[in-house]
Image (cartoon, rainbow, N blue to C red; front, top):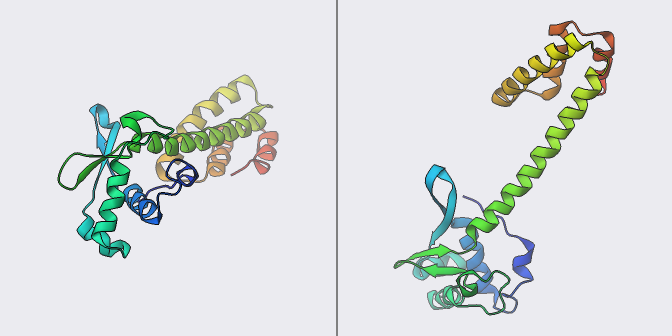
Length: 187
């Protein structure tokens, strides 16, 4: 598994908590496991923390690690996310903890992916518009249908986008203007 450290972790209410708190939180971020609800949607996250095991991993005593875990489980009146009174972890078992903001930060990562996907989609749309502006209505309809089919295939097989456009232009016997437009298309 992997985790993404957001820069605001280092500028929020954990300032001055000590390096061990940040080390344990880094471990939590890297190790948390999602809890899924109906339809596979992530509804929470949990992590296993055993200070006797984590102490040697982080190069500190288990007592220091436990102190950091206790800090992360305690209420934080300065928090910017008030759920659970600002706690970052909630103990649910001997070594099991619920990661309070796991879903929030997981969704932030997905939001960035969504934005990138939208950028790529806009780029494809602009390329397609540039290429098809000289087509007759019949050629345009055929190109649009073939483009949709080709895009599904490209997505499934991981083929380059430009290859689809070139194949589609050949398939419908598009005009020389379309072929010229392909030369300027972004990959």
